[in-house]
Amino acid sequence: MAPVEAGTREAVIGLRVQPPQQDFVGPAATALADAEHCPGSEPMAILRDGVPIGFYRIERNAAVIAGRDLGPGAFGLRSFFIDAAWQGRGLGTLALEAALADLCRRHAGARLLALTVNCRNHAALALYRGGGFEDSGELYHGGRSGPQHLLLRRLPG
Ligand SMILES: CC(C)(COP(=O)(O)OP(=O)(O)OC[C@H]1O[C@@H](n2cnc3c(N)ncnc32)[C@H](O)[C@@H]1OP(=O)(O)O)[C@@H](O)C(=O)NCCC(=O)NCCS
Image (cartoon, rainbow, N blue to C red; front, side, top):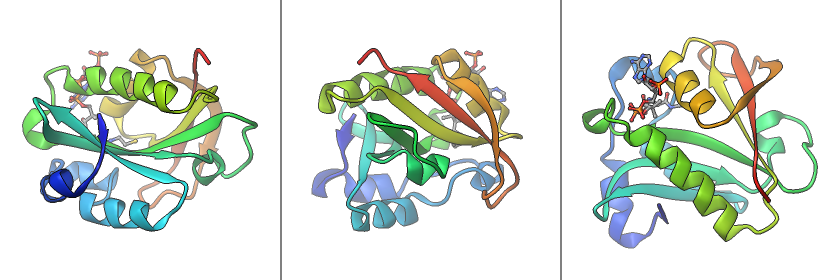
């Protein structure tokens, strides 16, 4: 994992998900441009041998994700994806684990990570549950493709 920088920016913009998955994440170019304009948002590249194969954003204020205050040390994860060519090989699982470790390394005060995931997104739900996220029981209805679960992951802190 590494922050998106000049050397990886174009490759990140070239990453794609499968067409049906576009219901669940927007284009990398849009997410990246938005992250670059939001002071609390950190655009991150998922690297394999130094080459981007995925992307995600860390939000330093989880309220951006959850729609409410989740207390001190609560961060948000959004736009997490693995390029279509690299999916289904366990890399999402490894990347999520590495993203959590990287977050804790960069932000000593991190205690909680929040994300929303579409109720129909079975691959991502399996990924996040396997990564220790728990369903808060709350449904978020602001998504563009239907209701989303709010998932929470306690961090070792
Ligand atoms: C979700 C995503 C990141 C998973 O990446 P990946 O590299 O394919 O993940 P892995 O190979 O590590 O598999 C992770 C889990 O997802 C499951 N999975 C993968 N593809 C699946 C599919 N098409 N249907 C159901 N489950 C699937 C795997 O079985 C595994 O679960 P398990 O550990 O219980 O067996 C990837 O599918 C993706 O980028 N999707 C589009 C973007 C997206 O939806 N992001 C989430 C936004 S909240």
